[in-house]
Structure formats: C-alpha cells, structure tokens
Image 1 (tube, rainbow, N blue to C red):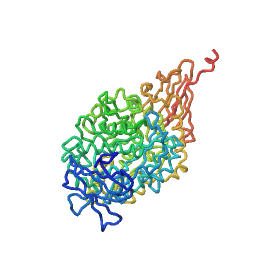
Image 2: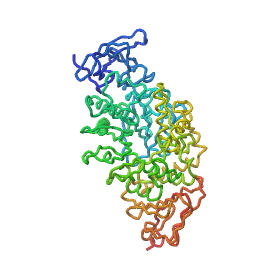
Image 3: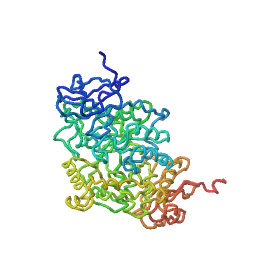
Image 4: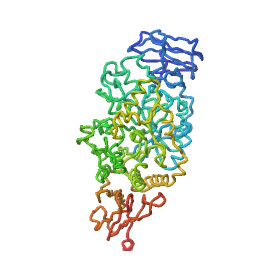
Length: 632
C-alpha cells in the first residue's frame, strides 16, 4: 500500500474524508499505539503504528477533525500527547486533537507580506492585551492599531504551555496554539483580519529550550536535550549531537507550519544566544530559509533577540551570515532608560545615557561591537558596518525590560513628563525600526510583571528563585530580599494586574495624541520616513543635548534637536550641522513640548543670532527657502 501524501513529516494529518495519518518520532519505543478516546476515557481504542527506519512510527485511522487521541509507548498504562499536536483543548496534560486546517476560509490572497523597512512593531501578549484575553477580543482592537499607524503586530509566544496564564516562553507543544486564547481557527481569523487592515503579524518563537512542566518529550526520546550544557532555562536543545537530525527536522517543520497554516508574516526568534549549534548550517538559518520558502511570493520578516549582538545573523548567507532581517537593539533601550531615570545598576552600568550614545545608535546601530563590557566582563558584539538602519529594532519598553524593574513599572512613571515625551519622539523618529509595547502608545498605567502558573511545586520554586536572583542587582537587594518582595509569578492577581485598561486611550489623551502624531510624522514626512543611517550625522550640543541632521538631496534636510536638560542657549551656534542649506532657513515642523501633549508650548529659536533649545524636549526643524532667494 502506498504511503498517504502528507504535508509535514510529523503529527496527525487528515489525508481524506474522516481519514487521518499519524506519524511520530519515538526512537525510545519498541512499539507505539494511537489511543483514540472516541468520546470516552473509559473505553479507548488502540491503533498499533508501524515502525519505520530511524525511530519513526506511523499509521492511519478512519477518524476526522475533532477526534481526541494520545500515544501509548511500549504498551504501558501511560499515554502521552502528540509532540507535534496541532491543538491541546485541555492543555498540555490532556489529549491532542485532530485539526483540519482547510476548514478556515482565508480572504488574504492579495496580501503580499512585509519587508522590514518602514515598519513600526507593536508587541502584544494576547492574555493581557484585552480584558477577555482571547484572539477574538484582540482582533476587535486591530482597526484602532491600524488607524494610528501601527504596521506589524509582534505576538508573544502562543505555543501551548502549562497553567491558566503565562508569558508563553515555557511552551511544550510547539505546534499547538494555546487553548487559553481560543481555537486554532480563532488565531487564523486574527491574522486574516489583520491582513485585511494592512497589518502584518509576526510570531515570537522559542527555539532555545522547552518548558519543564507538561513536557512529555522524554517519553519518546532521550535525545531532545543535551545534558550538561545547560543555561538559565535548563538543558539546551540537541541541534548538533547524536540523533539531532529528527530534532532539527522538528523545528524546521515548525517554522514552515506557522507560515503556511497561519499565514504569519515572520518570526522573532527568542534568545538565540542560548542556542547551542555547531552544525554546518545553524538551526535558525535553516528555519528561516524554510520559512521563506514556505511563504512563497509573500515577503516575511525574520528578527532575532541575541544578547551577544552577533551581527552576522543579519548578513546574507553569501556574506557568511544567517539571512535574518534584523535584531533587537538592547543598547538603545539601556541608554534611554539611563537618560530617563538615572538608573545605573546591573547592565545599565555600562551606559551613560549621554548624547553621544544616541548619536552613535543612529549612525551605527549597536553601541557595543566588540569592546570590553564591564557587566558581562567579556567582549560583546561584532562589527555591524553595512547593516542597514532598519535592521536595528529599538524600543524603550518591551515585556522583559518592564518586568525587570521588579514592580513592572513603565518608564513614564520613573521620569518627568517632558523627558518621557522627548525620548518617545526620538524612538519614533530615529532611522531604526521602532517597537512599542502594548499600551505604551496611550501611557498605560497597568504594570507588566512576570507571571507563570505551573503545577509542579519544584518548578514553581525554581522560577521564583531564578527571578529573584536575576533582579536582585537591579533592585539593590539581596536575593533573599528580592524573593520576599517580588510579586509571586503564580499568583492570579499578578496576572490580572497586567491587563490593559483600554479606556485609558481616552483618559490619557495627551500621550495618545503624542504617539499618533509621531507615527503620522514618521509615515508621511518625505525625509523622516527614509531609513538611512548613512544619511544622518549628529553632534553633541551640551551635557544633555544633541542634534541629528537628516541629510537629503534638494536641500530637504531635517534637524532633530534633543534636549533632556534645562533650557539651553547656543551663543554662538558654532556647530556646522545647524547651518541651513544656502538660501534656506529653518522652521519648526514638530515639537514634543506642544500643549497638545501637555507641554508648555515653549518654541525653539533657530536664527542667525541665537539658538534656544527648550527644556526636556525633542524638536524637528525643516528647511524653507528664503523668500528673497525665491525671487532671484
């Protein structure tokens, strides 16, 4: 009998009407049975699978979508969820569910995908983005995000994880969208609706570890993890050791799956510095290539988080790189937080928050490209010359950095309103790709804390102790003190406190207007929308002030004046970057000190006689042709 045609090498797939083919990698097993519940746990049906080479087992059953099943290994009394389950309706400990991906009717056939240039990312956690915490509720908010100028949603991980709430970075069923947020078709509907509004959706995926609770991979194979090469989240995944071939296949298939079956517009690869792989082809490069192939004519975006700032990941394979489009830029965040708050503990101690750091970020991307770094006591980064400006994803808020304050406080509550407006403007008008965290655009008062409910007491204690050890230096506390003061991650109240109050779009109107206007200015201004670090120069003007000049042809330059200090006069204004093009003058295009945003309305003065920079503000100037010159 010929083998049925499958789309993927693992999992349960419909191959006909009420006909499903099962395939699982289980080299640890002598035999594997599919346990079909048939609506009752008391009288299951057992379907023996046929052994294949290299530890695979497969077989077919006359069952269709919605059928629940498990795998029994070696005829024991225990049975386990499918490692490649497409849906876990009762969570990671329950049975797997057969899904028909063709039932959903897509309407995005004209969607061409995304390219990184010109994007503004918006990171969301589905469980806290709305009161309901579902994909359906989140989809209702997409028109407003599109209206204000967001272009791409970055969704925190959604692969099935244990408990009633969590960040999602401890996923255990990497093909199964979490049942907490709805059904797989609810997720498809979210993406489809986003595309109808011109919004892309990229998915945060975790390929550096598996969650420890609700993880049954060890029942099928002992080779998924490499023992003795652990990091802060446990043992590393075996991408380059004995029997690593099927594991690499598992992750490469996972990348294809999310792109093909859910139409995601790319990935953010979590903590790639924690991936150990000495293979000829780095696993993230392999996943990325497979994802692009799966997307076909659609363009997708691939972005990495990499604490080592290995710029080769953003270079093409021809250049010896991994072919990704961009990388999160923690350097910008750390400089911005020091400038906003004066915080200089932990890794913030390696940053001054002074003007030159922001100028360098605009011109070169990463600040650390191989210099000594005191916090790590090691070199950090590699040269990033030639990497385009949009490849550096910059932010002043994200899930990690807000939670790392311990209390989950957002930056605006740790600084003055003027400073917050000024740095927000810099973020949204710089040459990099900006990222906003959910609620940042309207000054959300809700914190974002670390929350994760796990049933295993030992794992729960380890998580709390690990968080205390990580955050103690930032809180100037001992680990024991941090353990008692930090909110308990498994407390439901910790989770519920993090839900957004969307009515703050109305009550915090000044902050909302600030972000809406900045997004419009970035999108519509003929020069600011051009992302070109090579077309930008900058100069320090004072202890807390600097200028960026956005150079252009046809004298269409822009000046961005940034001042976090008191009102500053330049007498005389000896910096040549302040000189307008011949027969032109400067006029104010936009200011963060506008009364519309809660500012004083103090105007910048830019004349031949003097320059005056208002306190705690960012101001954008544009060139205007002198009237006398126009008549000549």
